[in-house]
Length: 368
Length: 82
Image (cartoon, rainbow over the protein chains, first blue to last red):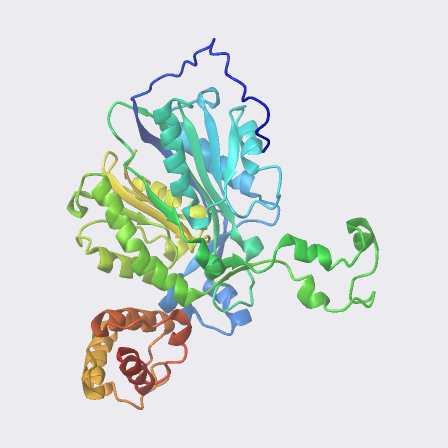
């Protein structure tokens, strides 16, 4: 940078005004959507040379929901969002921001959130969050701060995934793990604290632990100089004599180093959950619910043990029938547990999300 | 503080017992964790983390797959303790 010119001086004629907000935030309503099609383990086992019993033992999963081929993340998010808005008692005009947590919206751009906002009849600012299985808790943290800071009165947070589009049916470690679905919440202003401090972070050095198998640019290379149109109109690559098609053109899916994830999730995340309890100024005994990301029943059970949670606290185990729906798993479980009166409205719930990145976030919330 | 192989074996057997319910005397040096003791990968990880704590050693994720028999684990821990 040149230092010869004198630095400009500010005019100093205007003073910004900004509302000094001191209000609190809370979750006003939740909603969820599970696609109609139930896929039992029996539909999965053949490709991975496995059994229903093996899958249940290792993951707790009995069945999962898969979206229809023409059902998008926005379709699923819309149902959950409308339910959350109805529960919260707000209209589309009242939405001040739409935060959509997803890693399976199949467009690099535009984001899914603006289209969802439009479908709901809203022109509120809208963007996607890419924080994998921690996406919903990231959304709650950001939405809560928006409400507290005054940049939005009501924030719609959605966690939604169509993981079936990115699952390798022949991968023994992931083929049975993932499911599709959507969950949502509305965050609004409150006279009393309704969302505790978020304990969050990232461990990017462990990026390879859970990752898409190859970048989109790799697929482009498989066209080997042909345009998309030429490739689409021409003969299949195999017939065209293109080498290595199987490898190069392989559709990206999600791959996971299961044991490493297990170690990180249980022994790495239990202290994070404990910090969220401490930061909220409560003890584990005060909790009315524990709603961890539904990654694997073994992770959930081991985490409870590590946290030394009192035995009478209801724990989300939706993994059994919804499998791992990434960003959607926590709000789907919350909505079900409230609807089935398993957990009390007004009670305290500890929620923690953790996943690809690696990223994580935990907070204690007051249930709507 | 280095422990004898017998001490490590006994400590490991207690950890295995706690995780799986198997009798400690079934945890013998020549037994395979997967084939003989029917311990799956996630239980193995729990055993590994508890062993790290108990024996004051670090067992990297990449190393776990090499610990096929109880003897492998005892040797690894023994060497790691120096």
